[in-house]
Amino acid sequence: LVTITPFFFFFLLVFESLAALSLKSLGWTMDNHWSPEINQCVMIAAPHTSNWDALYARLALKAMAVPVRITIKDSYMRFPFGPFIRAMGGIGINRRPKQAGEERPSMVQVMTDLFAQHPKLVMLVTPEGTRARREHWKSGFYHVAINAGVPIALSYLDYQKKTVGVGKIIYPTGNMEQDMREIMQFYADISPKFPELFSLDTRYLP
Image (tube, rainbow, N blue to C red; front, side, top):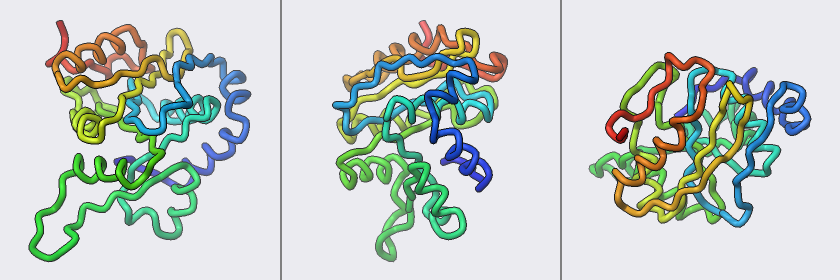
C-alpha cells in the first residue's frame, strides 16, 4: 500500500500531461522494454530510496503508455482523495470478510483476485516495502504473479546513469529461488539515489 496526499497527485498530474518532455527536461533518458501486448502483469518498482522515485517512475511509465495501477486501501477512494487517486490509476483494496465469521483474506489473495476482475491490469508494487534499508524483500508480489499466471516486469531508476524505465520482463517458473535470483541479478547493477538505503534480498544472492 502507498501513502498519498492530494498535493502529491496534483503535482504528478501536471507533469504527466507532458511526461516525455518533462523527463527530458529533468535530464533523464528512458529504457523501454515494455511490450504493449502485455495486458496483465505485476510490475516491480525499485530501488525505492527517495520520494523523487515516484515522480520519475510515473513520468516514464506515462511516456511509455504503460497503464499502471496502484493498490491502496479502499477507504482512500472516497471523497476528497478518490478523484485524485483514480486519476492516477489507484485501485481500492478491501480485505474485509465478505460474510460474518469468514477469515480475513490475505493481501496476496485479494491482489490475485484483482487480476480475475480486470482483464487489463498492470499492478505496481514496491517489494522493499519502505525507503529504509531492508535486506529481505516482501515476496507477496511473486506469489501474486504465480497465482494469477502473469509475468513480472522489472522497472527501475538508475540515478548514476539517469536512466528510468522497464528493463526486463520475467515469466516466473514456479521455482522461486531461481526466479528471485534472476531479479536480484538485474537490480544488482542499478544505482539508487541513496545507495546506503538500498539492499538486494540477501536470501537470493550468490
